[in-house]
Image 1 (cartoon, helix red, strand yellow):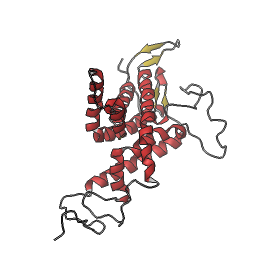
Image 2: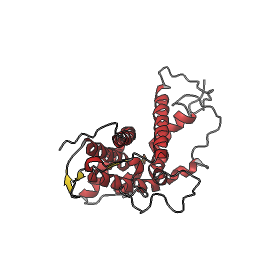
Image 3: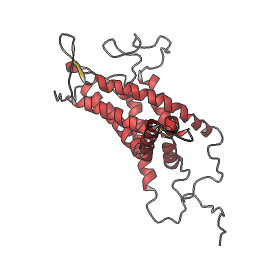
Image 4: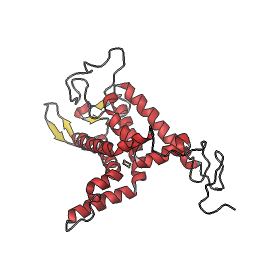
Amino acid sequence: MADVGTLIRRGFGETSRRDKWWVQPLVVFTILSSFIAYTTWAGFQAKNYFYHEDGAHYLSPLYSPLLYGQEHEPRWVGAEVPSWWPGFLPFSPAFLILIGPAGVRLTCYYYRGAYYKAFWADPPACSVGEPRKGYLGENSLPLLLQNIHRYFFYIGALYILILGYDAYKAFFFAGEDGSNHFGMGIGSLVLTLNAVLLGGYTFGCHCSRHVFFGHLNCFGKSLIKKKCYDCVSLLNTHHMKWAWVSLVWVGFTDVYIRLCAAGIWNDWRIF
Ligand code: FES
């Protein structure tokens, strides 16, 4: 009989577990692969990311902030393509900004645990044998680079501000005389929910707990610091749920705006 603490070596997929341990990694693999395939396709489209019929102002989160774009679009720089972009390469405004949100998710502590299991079986699930003998952890390159996550948190927080502004703009519709009036379409709600869900995911980050006063030994008499810390801790408790719901919704938000812009769906104006 093995002593307590003796490492049990199992062959790949070998386990004494009797439950369906393979379901979770399979679901993770399916959803993440589908999301990566869709966002790659959508990023290469370079069209139908901005819906502006009937004065609406809906910008897909996969293209926000829109650094370069057409004249009628909410671009930050006054050109369709950056002058430094190599002419032989296709260009899409999404190429310049997807590194921010992609970096947050790729290095997220939760996602790491999920995709290490689902994509390279390291291990496939708890107590299931993996296809390698040595365990290197994240102490050497390239996985050592995952430590960059604490910096991606700040970038992610900046994106939330921008997406919040996009959601705010989605409640204003341009009239024929050029003035803006307050209104609400289904797209306004879709973009608002997108910002809320991404905010819940980003501010529930482990790094967020540190930033929002978790680095202190004592809150002293500050009720505000304690409340902030409690709030982000609550988000953090459900970080996995925020991660998945926000992922699916950001994809749906792009689909919604894309289909409206392509004239396939109509945006229903509530008022
Ligand atoms: S741990 Fe998931 S976003 Fe930071």
